[in-house]
Length: 144
Image 1 (tube, one colour):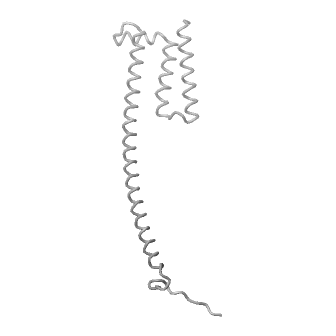
Image 2 (cartoon, helix red, strand yellow):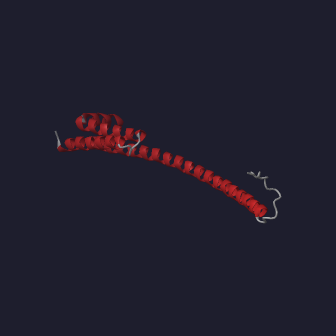
Image 3 (cartoon, helix red, strand yellow):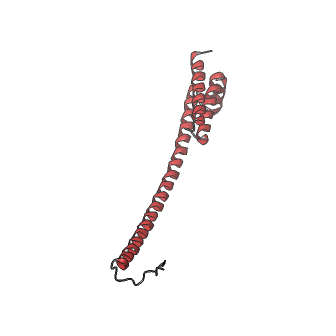
């Protein structure tokens, strides 16, 4: 077995281990891990069966199997980039919506604070003068 094939298998196995470990520790979500698992398995298959790369290169019109592998790697990276771009766009929309909701909640909070301050000022004004008991509830006196 050629040295590059052994290296390919070792690197693919390391990638598989790292992806599974990151999924286990919840540092990588399953929808992203799937792509990397497929890539690692594909590298193992191409390393174990180099005839597969030759066959695919021949039938796609690529002159050498190594060029086909580079083409395949470029396509995979372009697809990952496209997927991550759509995720970023979705997250930007969620952040914008959240910021708008926070701004509305802050406005409501400020309105509630102003209303509460007004009520407190009104109650303080009513109770400021001890001789003026208008508007205060009646208190029953207990006599012994």
